View 1 (cartoon, rainbow, N blue to C red):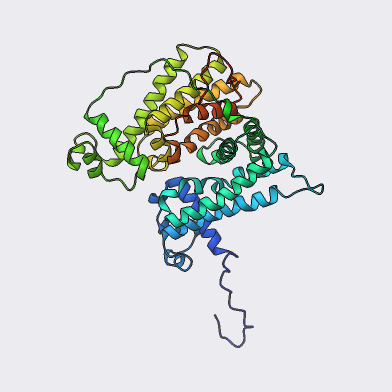
View 2 (view 1 turned 90 degrees about the vertical axis):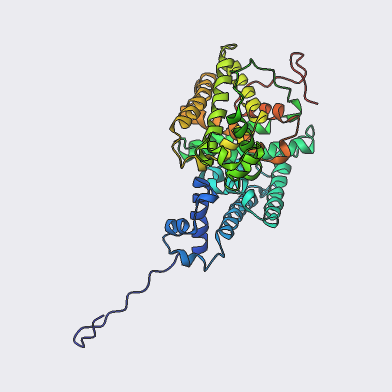
Length: 414
């Protein structure tokens, strides 16, 4: 700055002010990265770069990356809590306008998908105490929505109500798992319609899914044994925490011997995902060989998807590891997945002939997310009624006619 006395002094430029809530900005950028890449593939430096700050400055607010994750998860929970408070506030007549409440919840899912998604994906990276806090607060939110939306449904058991409430959250959070190009207003309107379908469902009416035609026979060998063991380990512990030596030990060989079959742990994950895609493709071919009507085809595709999802961990591992897979050369796998989803979208468009393509895609992803979310929860892995229940919920969201439990051609779930 000039000190010439003949020059009128000017004020020293002020340092650029920090955002009003730098901590929230860091949390928001971190949440976006965690969802896009997965926790294990995001560094503190990545978060700092996304927020436009230096790495060391982050440690003024957080002790480490795990603390940032917990803050991001809790920020999403708080967003849902605030939305719930606003949505379920009684009107002047003392009544809660449920339609408006559901619209507000869906608006949150569309405009701030991080709030509806991150807390559902992060349990493996949180401490038991942190998971307990997340569970306690989300259960409170769930019970509030259950009471408001289903309080009049005396025909539902408490377990049915909980399942439907979780289904609503899955539908609402499904926007975060796909990139369908659709305006916010149209996405919100479609989610409201889909949630409305959930509200009318009765889980007790779920019936056992019909056996499907056999797909293509799969070869059994050391390679598939490795994939089976790896899929089991990845499902239980997450991809990042499992080592190649552990995979080898699970099949009775050494870690280096695994490399005779796969070049890396990432190659194993890609092979697991490709195998699940092949199973889905084979089951789809079998379905198209026995049905022609769009509704019948879609119903059988749901059944086949549930059978693949619940019979092996492959599909869950592929879905839960999608952020890891995006970092590798997996163009063929992506093509398989897109082609498979496109089958569903095409059938929805044939069933709802006035429905635009983006809305049809959103509908399909919502249905798939119901099942994928449910099978991330360990308590659901051994519930014998889950396949029938998930098929029922998916078909309901897709707008398919639900076969009454009294239909003699179907077997009720006990």
